[in-house]
Image 1 (cartoon, rainbow, N blue to C red):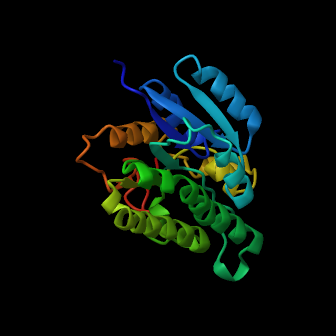
Image 2: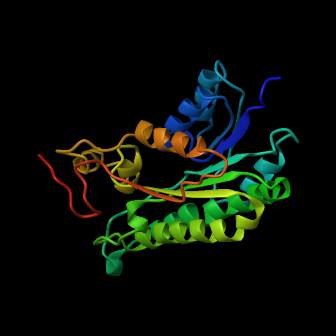
Image 3: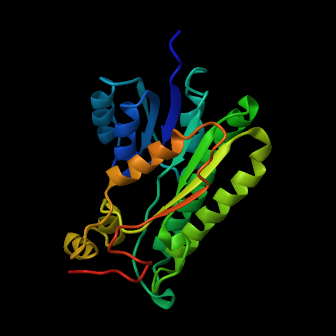
Length: 253
């Protein structure tokens, strides 16, 4: 009898790490719920991946608790049995000292990186608890391990992700649910374009003179984490390109 595919829900699946992860998991016998704000990208990705596995899309903004709840409630009974939650949606806005920071940028980072993760998790985790199984992967950042100049609120939001990951692991231990935190350094995605509000030249300079991580590198690590034996959990993983030694020490050529 064929083994039933595990269902993985991925937030922020329309680009970067989330998109690369969806592509890789589709090739490895996972059914996918891909989530994001851009329906056109979700549809395009689903059309591509449906050749490999079962895929459904959910179009919502993680900042909107009502949208999150309505979208997840719309899932059929089969699709509500989510085995894997990959909290990947996140962003950075601006790079300013605290005294001149933009309050709208602060709100966006806290709403997406912290509250959005909580909104989605709160809807998915009770089902995992009822089934006494599941795996949650929270995508953090090296910014959640060490603070760097002008990182202030972004770093605070990613420190919160790290703390929530640890708290989840403790609270869910009795229910056999694995919880993993993965914290990348420099990854070349749309991240810096968003941070610098569409300034592509400034964004490209972030990765100038080095070979950064790619979304595909992160997807490989996520798959590795998901395919460990049942008694093994990768609790915490910090991943850097070879050129990066810390948040602020980077070798450029």
